[in-house]
Image 1 (cartoon, helix red, strand yellow):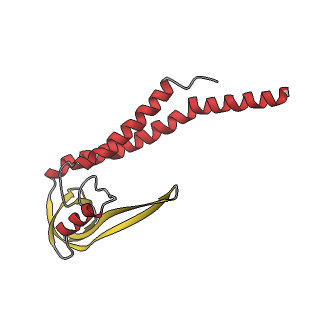
Image 2 (cartoon, helix red, strand yellow):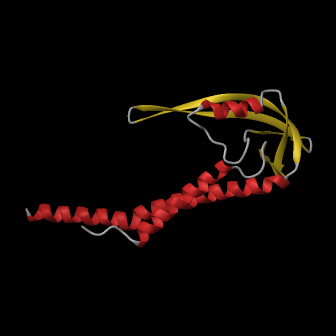
Amino acid sequence: MAEDHADETTQKKTKNRFLKYIFPWVFILIGLVTCWIGFRGVYLGYVSSSWPTATGQVVSSEVKSSTSRSNGKSTTTYFADIQYIFVVDNVSHSGTRVAIGDYGSSSSSHARGIVNRYPKGKQVQVVYMPDNPSECMLETGLHLQAAFLPVFGLIFLGVGVLIKVRPPKES
């Protein structure tokens, strides 16, 4: 009987240690990584308007979908799969990014709109990073969807810091 109580107490202490010391760091780490990726994207979107351009051609343009299953429900996400080629300093490059923050949607209309703007065979102006042409896109600047990752990362970071500063009470 006393042994069972001791095991239960040990389990509670282990759970509380996890919640106090490890759990918040998981949130903080995910938040920091997501913020870094997101703010890098926002920065690239901002500076991309001053990058050089090259004439390219769309070699593939189609709406693709991905279906996932969760709790017995199927969810389909549609996204535009655009591939283009261009030449910089007699070196051929390829790209797939349309804009910073490209996203999929449960409605195919968003992806269809992008595919309609960039049909296979269309000549396009590709914007590329001067010292790394593989970092390229078709639409420059900041778009609202680019804010998703930084905001998501800040939320995770905030939750992790909040849990770290105000850990759950011991039971």
